[in-house]
Length: 191
Ligand code: GRF
Picture 1 (cartoon, rainbow, N blue to C red):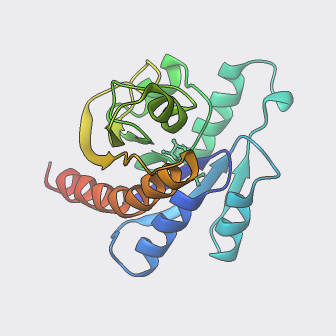
Picture 2: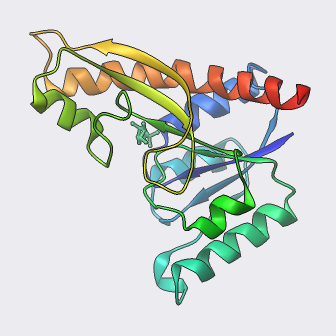
Picture 3: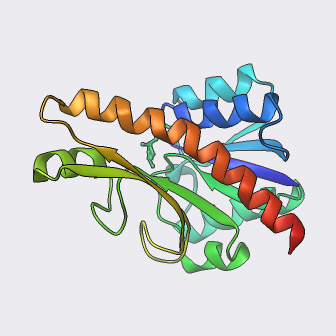
C-alpha cells in the first residue's frame, strides 16, 4: 500500500512516521509529502528522507476546488491508497473527501469532540481541565470530526505550563500515530 502525508508546518509527526516506515513499524510506502506552504521545515524532513514533495499554495489556484483537483490528480497518478494528515491546516471540500472515503486519517491534540480547532492544546490548558489527550480519527466533511480510531489521555498536572503540556502531547502523538497507521494498514489489508 502507498500513502501520502499532508503537512503545513514543522512536521514532527511526519518525522515520527518517516522513522516508523524506515524501521518497518509501518509496512506501507510513504511515497509523497504534500504541503500547502513552500517554506516549512516538514518539507526538509521529507527531502532528507528522499521522499517526493509537492506544494499546493492557495495563491496558485483560482479556487479551493481547483487546488484540490490538482492534488487529487497527483494522488491518483502516484496510486496513493490513503492519506495521513499531520498538522495540515486546510479544511477539505466534500469533493476531496469523496475521493478518499474512510481513507483520510487525522491527528488532533485533544480528546475530541472537546477542543476542536487550531489551538486544541492551549484551549484545553486554559479551560482548567485536568485531563486532555490525543485523538486519531477518520476525516469526514466537518473539521476535526469523523469516526474516532483511538484516543489517549494526557493528564494536566498542577505544575504543567503550556510548554510542558505541548511537549507531553507531542510525545504521545509521535508514538500513537505510527501505531494507529499500522493497525489501519493491517485492517485495510484484511478487508
Ligand atoms: C500536532 O499537534 C497535530 O496534532 C496537529 O498539528 C500539530 C502538528 O505538529 N494536528 P507537527 O507539524 O507534526 O510538528
